[in-house]
Image 1: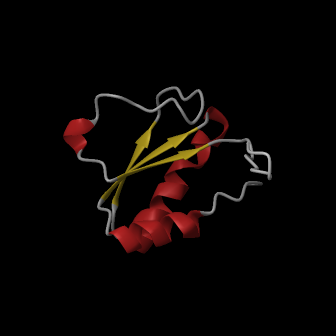
Image 2: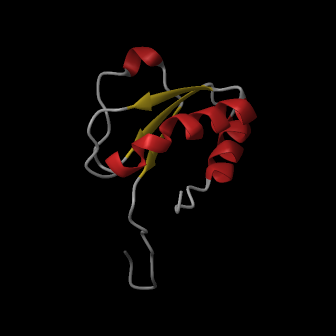
Length: 89
C-alpha cells in the first residue's frame, strides 16, 4: 500500500478516549485494505471495528441510520491530501 493512513494516530485517539466501537469509512480504492486496517486497530486497542462498505463521496458523506450501533468514532479515509496554508484550505 502506498498510502500513509496514520493508523498510529487513530490508535492513539481510540486509547486516549477509550472508544469501544469504531466505524471505518473508506474510498473505493482503499476498500481492499479495510480488513487489514480494522485488524490492526482491533489488535492494538481491543475496540470493535465496523467497516462501512457503502458508497463514499468524500468527507461530508457520512453514513446514516447507524445510531443503534452506538459508534464512538467514525474514521474516514480518502485519497486526497488536504493541506491548510496560511490563507486557509
